[in-house]
Length: 190
Image 1 (spheres, rainbow, N blue to C red):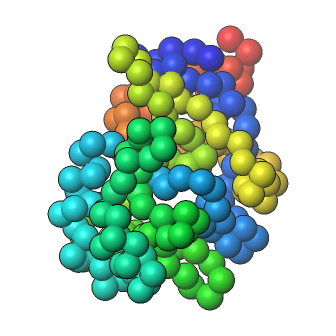
Image 2 (image 1 turned 30 degrees about the vertical axis):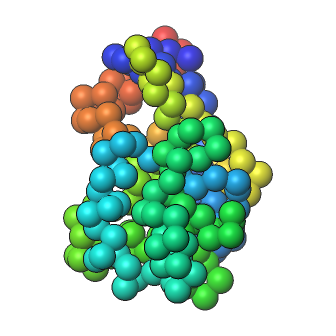
């Protein structure tokens, strides 16, 4: 672990390799698990605002879940998160064949909205936990991502490079530049 500004960062994000392999996992992270995607308070407001524009991109089951539960929910651990369909799929998930995709991101890709998706989804496999004085930045290992670890190793892409855009979105350009310096120093044995 090392500190960058007000973050405590796991060295795993520098040392472990990762590249999503949708052709192998089919977006399992959007349909497996026991909770929705973590959200910030600001993101709950964004979801409420963009829902009418995102709704045409969603499946019937997702729309029903959102209209029953809301555009966001308070999870069992009191965290804010996306609602689920029958406690499984994220309500915002859509399918291209058997591959799960994000309906929010599809609306973004088509220029309907200007918000890509929750930052927790964009950052994955990195999870950020906010505390009062700092944020913990960790690599989240999940068996369903074994194909991504294999592909990342094959392509030699460390986690922090795979999620560069999302890390900059979350922490800013300067923070990311500092992270790259730490990675370079670690690589050079400093």
